[in-house]
Image 1 (spheres, rainbow, N blue to C red):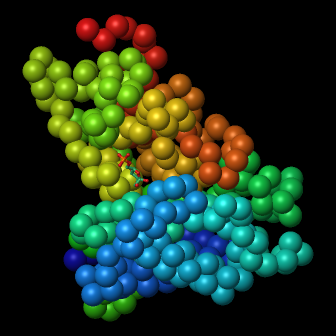
Image 2: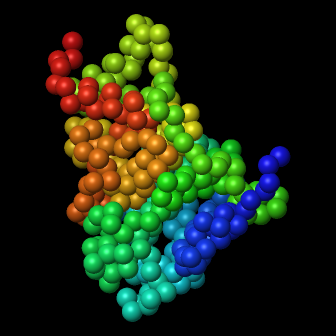
Image 3: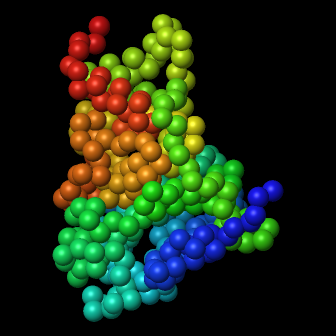
Length: 332
Ligand code: P6P
C-alpha cells in the first residue's frame, strides 16, 4: 500500500503559495462529503417531488437545493470566494464585497448534475471551475471574469458513486481523491491521471440519432460499424450522468458526445459549469474537447447558462469524430 496522502496534504504541497485557493478547495471537499452523506440516506429522505422543475425547465430534486446550499455555505465561510455562477440560479451570486482582497475567486458550479438519476441509484456529480478574478482586467465584474479562460486556474468534479471521488485538474496535473468514510476526508487514490490516446468506447444518447445532423449520424454509424468491419470493435456506454460518463472516459479512454439536436440546437450541456470544466480536466489529462468544430476552451461565455455541443475524450477519437462530423457525406 503506497503512502497515504490526504487531499489537504496534496493541496499544501502543490498550492503552498496560494493559501486562499487551498481554503477554497477544502471548502469544496467539505460540501462534497456532506452531499455524499445525504445521498447515502436518500432512500430514507424520499424521492423527488414530481413536477418540480428548475429555471431551465428540467426536473428538480430536493437534493439539488440541498447540494447548492451546502456549497454556497462552505464557499461563503471560506471567505475566499467572491461570486458563484450556479446552475440553480438565474444570475450570479456575489458572496462578498468587491473590495475584499481575500475573496479572490469566482466559481462556476453545477451543484448536483444528473439529479434525475438519484432515485434509481445511478451515479451523480458536482462540477466546478475556479477563476482568479485578480488575474483578469475586470476583477470586480464576475461576468467579465468568466467571459474567457484568462482567469481560470483550476477545475474539478465530484463523483458520487460506488465511492465518492474528487478529480481535481491543476495546470498539467489531474489527480483523483477518494472519500475515506471510515477515517473521514479524501485521500489521494489516482495520481497524475492521463487519458489514453485512443479507446473503443463511445458514449452518446442514441435515442437522439434521428434528431442529429448528418455529420453526427455518420460518426455514430462509424462507431457502430467498428464492430463489423474493423479489428477493434467499439462498445457503447451511456450512463446519462455527465460526470459518470466523463470519469469512465478519462480513466479508460473513449469519447463522449452531446451534439446539437433538432430540439436543442446548441446542445444540452452548459458551457460555464459543465463543458468548460470537463474540457479543462480532460485536456490537462492529455485529451481533447471540441464542439465538433471549435475548441471548447476557446469559446467566449456570452450568457451565464449558454449551451454548447460537446465532443470530448481521447485525442485520436475526437480527431476522427471531428473529421466525420464536418464531412457532409450522405447518410445512406
Ligand atoms: P439526456 C443530466 O440530466 C445531464 O445534464 C448530464 O449529466 C447528462 O450527460 C445529460 O444531461 C443526459 O441528457 O438528454 O441524454 O438524458
